[in-house]
Amino acid sequence: MASDLKLRVLSAAVIAPIAILSIVIGGLAFELLMLICYLAMVYEWTSINGLNPKSHLKSLKEFLLASAKQLPSKALPKKTKKFLFASLWTCFPPLALIIMRYVYILGETWEFVVLGGLLLICKILQRKDTVSLVSFSGKARLFGLGFLYISIPMYFWIIYSTLSDHNICRIYVFWVFSIVWSCDIFAYFGGRLIGGAKFAPSISPNKTWSGVITGSVAAIVVSCFYLSYFLQASPALVISSVFMVAASVLGDLLESKVKRLLNVKDTGSIIPGHGGVCDRLDSFLMVSYVFIAVWWLFL
Image (cartoon, rainbow, N blue to C red; front, side):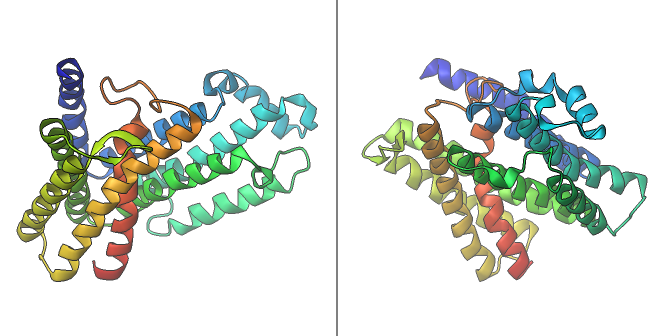
C-alpha cells in the first residue's frame, strides 16, 4: 500500500501542475493538452484491442502512397489498412480544428472543417480499395464503441475551447476536474482507511461502499463550494453535481468492466501508479458527457 501510494503521489505531483497550468493558460495550451490525451487514449485503446500501433505506423508511408496511387487492397495487409485509416481519421478532425483556429483561416466557421472531414471520409469509403470501418463486426464493435466513447467528449472540449471565452471555459473545466479529482482522492483514502463491504466485486474488487460514499459526498461538497464561488449555485447546477458525481463513479466502473472483458489490468503503463491515460481519465470522460447535457440545458 505504501509503495503504491508513493507512486501515485509522485506521478500526480508531476502531472497535476502541467494539467492545471494548461487549463489556467487556456486556449492553445489546453487544446493541445486535450489533443495529446486524446491521441494517447486512442493509442492505448487500440493496443489493448489486439492491434500493435508501433508496427502498423511503420507502414504509414506505404499506406499513403497506396491510397494516392489507388493501388489494389493487396498492397498492404488488411489489418494494417484498417488501423492506419482509423488513425488518420482519428487525428485529422481535432488537429485541423486547432490549426484552423490559430491561423485564422476559417475563424468562427469551424463547422466547415468538420463537414469537409466527413465528406473526405465518405469519399474514401466509396473507394473499392479501402477497407470500410462500417464493415467491422464481432470484437471490433467494442473497439468502435470505445473509440466513439473516447472521441466525443474530447472533441467537445477542443471545439468548446476554440469557440468560447477562455475564462468561462477555464471555470467549467475546473468544475469538472474538481468533481473527478475529489471523488477519486476521497474514495481512495476512504476505502483504504474504512474498508468494509465491496461495491462491485465482480467488476472492481478493490472498490468498497465506504470509498464510494466518502468520495461521492466529498465531491458533492467540493462542487457546491466551487459553484457558490465561481458560478451561481442554482438548484439545477447543484442537482447536476449529483449526476456528475454519479457519472464519475460509473466511469471508473465502466472501464473496469471493459478491462475485464479484454483481460487486461491497465490500459497502459505510461503513468506510474496509475496505469495508462485511459485509467486516469476514465471518470473524466463519463462526467464530460453529463456536463455536455448540463451545458446544453442550463449554461
